[in-house]
Every structure is written in C-alpha cells, then in structure tokens.
Length: 371
Image (cartoon, rainbow, N blue to C red):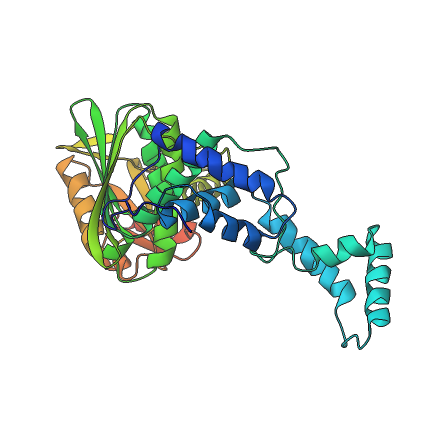
C-alpha cells in the first residue's frame, strides 16, 4: 500500500523548506539502499515508500537527485564507446556474445561484466544508482528541487517581475546578456525588472524560456529579492511569489562565453576606435537604461545597445525612453533571428549572429546619424 498525502494544488507550486526534511531523509534512505540497482528499481521503491507525501513531491526529489549527481554527458560517451565495440551483426549464441564482450573488455581495460553493465548506462532508467560523493544532504536536494520548480514556472511564464536591492546592475547586465525583453526601473532603493515571459511571444518560445530560466540560479547570491511569476500550469493561470528565505543551490561559476556586445567592442577596437564598455546606467523618468557601449564618431558620442529577443513594440518603447532622457545619438543592434522585423526602425542596426561593424559605422556616419 502506498502511503501518501494528496496536498499538491496544481495552481500554486510549493517550495520546500525545513518541514520537508524528515520525509526527504527517508527518501534518501531508500536511495542508499538502492545503490548499484537500476534507476527503475529506485523509482519503483520510492513510489511505494511510506513517505506520506504526494507523488509529485517524490518525483521532484528524484529529479533533483539526478541534477545533484550529474554525469549524463560522461555516461553517454562511455555507452557510445562500448556499443561501438560490442554491437554489430546479431550474436546467435552465447559463446559469440561472450567473445564480443571479452574483446571489448580487453580493448577498454575492463571485465566482460563491466562492459555489459555499461552498454546502456546512458539510458535514464537503466543506469545504476551511484553516490560518488556519498549521501547528499537533505537541504541540497530540497534546494535543487526548488530551483526546478521555479524554473518550470519561468519557462511557462506570461511575465515576471524581479525586485532586487543589492548588486542590481550586475543582474541587469545578465538579463541583457541572455537577450531577454525587459524594462528596468527604480522604485525607492530597489531596482525592478519587468520581464516578458515566453508565453507572450509568437516565436522562439522554447529558446527564450530556457534563457529566462537561467536567471533563477543567480538569485542564490542575492540576500534580498522578490520574484513574482505569472505563468500557465496545467492549462490554468498560476502565480508564484519567491522571496528569501528560500533554499537554492549555490550559483555555479560557469565559463562565460563572449557576448555579442563584447565581440562588437573588440571588433571596433581592432579598427582603432576607442570604446567605453558598459557605460553608466541612464535614468529616464522611472526607467533605467543600460547601454552596452559608447564610442565617439565624427566628434559625436554614440551609445550602442545590443538586443537579443525583442519585438517592434519593445524597440519603440526603448527608443522613446532614450528620447525622454534627451539622448538622440543611440543605435540599437537587433538580432534578426530573435527580433524579426525590428530593423525597420531608423535607429536599429540588424545583424545575424554577429554585428557587422561596417553596417554600424555606416549608420553613425550617415548625415542624420542613426535617426
């Protein structure tokens, strides 16, 4: 008999806290007892364990465990290598099959039993349960489960509002790096980011949703924030409010790729232009603008902002904000793959993958500049 409590309302995702630690600890007991068994065995044992929580919470913790353990890429490479050595024409008898395994084992420096166990190690339900770093902490599992729940809402969001009080400029720059459609404004001593969600777009919604979800892990480094998400879950509108204290895994220090704006700065500097990177933010009424570059052309100082995802309405609104700040010498560089049609505006330089420096400089040198 499965002992569970049906407590999971579809419209209000619940985040995990101290009250969940006892049953998470019992679930980890089941994990430890299943080491060496295929994941399908662990899943079945967790489904039938006397945890007294809804099935969705069990599934959330198992998914979090996969993220904690990681290693999917390495397992895929190992399995592909083993299959390349073992698989081929059908092995019609046990002796031929064992001979193939032995040959592969000799090539890889393993035993035949090891090779057989690695054949399908990349399949989610067939790989063995391993705890290479020992038993994870209950709080670590809860943090990764919280991250996935918040990111799930973000990937299905109509819009979200993020309010931060510390190191806001750094977070805003990351929003720009991910190419998200947002408006930034000040509200007292807080910075407010109003960000369009993927469900408000008509194109590239999956890509945009993944980009937007990358913001969530960064919140672990912010002691004070408020995140409000309006999303669609199970065919119904839902709202999620997130604020400290909330368990999230520490933000990973992933290797950062050169952004399009950084590449543009390098290209301009290679041609001898003096470029100011990340010039100071500009106030425009209650909004705040964050240009990526500034350079002088023909004795005139120009601001350049690179856009990722965008719409024509968003471009028009951003240009209007610059005008209200009494800044006419600005050019927006719009990625035509994720901002189709936005280059029709006079002060927009369209690009694909990389901003063409000649196109940008031609706009700045035109008699009317970028206008």
